[in-house]
Amino acid sequence: MSQQATTAKRDGFSSRFGLIAAAAGSAVGLGNIWKFPYIVGENGGSAFILVYLISILAVGIPVLLAEFIIGRRGQANAVRSFKKIAPNTKWSAIGWMGIISAFMILGFYTVIAGYTIHYFILTITNSFAGMSAAQITDTFNNFSSSSTPIIYTVIFIILSLAILFGGIKDGIEKYTKILMPGLVGIIVLLVIRAITLPGAGEGIQFLLKPDFSELSIKAILDALGHSFFSLSVGMGTMLTYGSYISKKENLTSVTFSIAAADTMIALLAGLAIFPAVFAFGIDPTAGPGLVFITLPNVFLQMPGGVIFGALFFLLLFIAALTSVVSIFEVIIAYVTEELKVNRRKAMGLTTLAVIVISTFCALSQTSDSALVFNGHTLFDWMDLLSANVLLPIGGLLIMIFLGFIMKKSDIKDELQQGSKSIKNTMAYITVTKFVAPVAIAIVFLTGIQALFS
Ligand code: PHE
Image: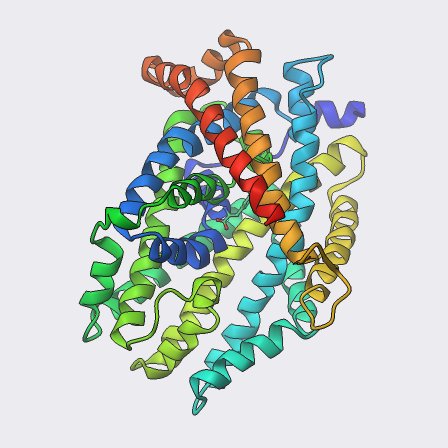
């Protein structure tokens, strides 16, 4: 690293609210609003929610806290932080895996993120008016299997760059401080609209009435896997953000606030969607098509549907934007610090690479695409390999690193900042350093099977 880079003051979050907005912004994403509601629906409602909460406590939060500790201790990007804490070891490979995961997730995530712009425009211009359910399905299939999504993906990436451009304090923090309260406001409005519809009760019951008979092994694994993706852990995102957290901040309380915010928003998303779906007698188990096929049908029948539909896709857009920005930052921090280029150049290089990958991902969804391997499109591979392989391995290694490699005195030192007592947190780490790796290993081994089925 150049002398200048080592001595220059590191950019960072300037307030606790800004830090929480940015990190919760990373956590709250398509995973909360698009995926969580439909996996809850498929897996038995509130019984599944209970398992999910346990997974968050046993696996998600420990890895999140670990990433914050490692990042703030390392004061550098995901690769260098490990090098600084454990010099002359191979643990920095975790950082490398994180960078590879970041490219893969950006590859497919920005494509879906681009859909939200298209769907926002379709809803606000009332384009679904007069369409039958079949026509709404065709609209989605025709769009997603054409090359049009590439345009929206590129627009989406450019919008994220506008946020990233200002760095941490004057970029990510500044914008997420506005976007996240906006997101909360929109979701609350949508929940009020949904639960006041005649016939909403059935949907609320579907979501909240525990049905343990539906709780399969698959449900438990889904809950564990999702707790991981949803908190943005296992690939250095929170580690990189951790390196920007001020030394005054209490890491334990920040970690719990973020996990609570992430879980609340996921639950609210369920409450915004299912009561409405039931009120109009539409099948709630549409799976991944729930948002882009089922919901336009719902909005078409709902009083004020144009406004509420547009607000919903705006919500999805904001959620995706603040997540994409955080994934980008993993790579940009690495490129700036290691290749010794300025932020603007690092952003340019990273963006070019990401646009190439997402274009291939989008093209792999088109009809007769050659980018299909072993029955899965390139898009699916990026999703499966990152969520089922790289994130669990990353999380497992991060927990082992914190629990068994890092000096206890270093951990204590990080936890003591801004904190009165660290006794409970240390006890929590002592238990979860065994529980979390075992649970993750199980999810990983079963997740791998999905790749070959
Ligand atoms: N947590 C985000 C979501 O729920 C996705 C994400 C994964 C973001 C990994 C950053 C890193 O959509």
